[in-house]
Image (cartoon, rainbow, N blue to C red; front, top):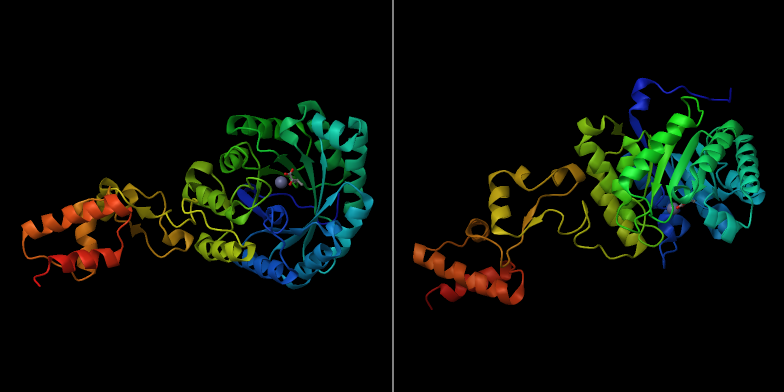
Length: 397
Ligand code: KIV
Ligand code: ZN
């Protein structure tokens, strides 16, 4: 038995560990290089909302990256601090050294397991890949009781090889087995089945968790992550705002809200306080210097904006008609009614009333509404200044 080996209780078995890789895979977003101070600040924010594991970086990548992981390890409390390493002795040594100061730490080792990775990138036989994986897990485990093994490009690997290498990593002491969809290649039904098969066939104790790590190349990262949870994974790897290589990783805010809002369907929970997610997202966009896509789920400017008359009327009757979860549940103030060419009289009247504008007769209201529609046809959205100008043009001179 390894030191600190735990047996998952029923409630632990229903709890999904939130592993955030914003500072590692997220930072691999082209054009982004965070300073150690920025990493520490984001890590503190992640810990404050209740993320369980923070992957702080890849210490072997550069002296600055080593120093940043070290700074996060020394100064961020409340979460496990994780460092990434290839299955290379010097990488594992760097990850161990950089995380030395953490109260709780994890070493994360990975190696490509698919034929394309083995042959084109690693130029290794399956046996050599297996030996490297076992050696790296063994090295890490000699100094740290929390070791994660990732079978990179698992979704394009042969199932028997994947089963063997996961079993060997567990034998060598890995406590988390991560099944990355490295190129965002899988689809939900396939990923769920894969997770079920691995959990059923790879011998493991109840202290071992299986994990998702899904990329968004085909826009399926969140769906695949949720499918992995349905398949039995009890750790999800996510990044705030879906940051990451190419099209990014599964977004923390999307996976978090999907599990929370549909907890009874999933039968699992997680420990992230979703009410803190919007502020965290905004700070991360600022640190990464990335624009916020208006239609980004949960945190985009339009995520709670209603433009069409039918939707606006529904939301004014009961917001649940067109909102799957409340803006407040993810830390946002309120929904907005965007006044455009699809908008109806209900929202127009309500906004005019909020601006203190009233028309004495039904004819004038009709006139004002017709003119508003014409303005909206021309300019898209009509803002408050436009509405006030419209009202003034009706007033007797
Ligand atoms: O996408 C991937 O396979 C990775 C691994 C290093 C976990 O990021
Ligand atoms: Zn990745």
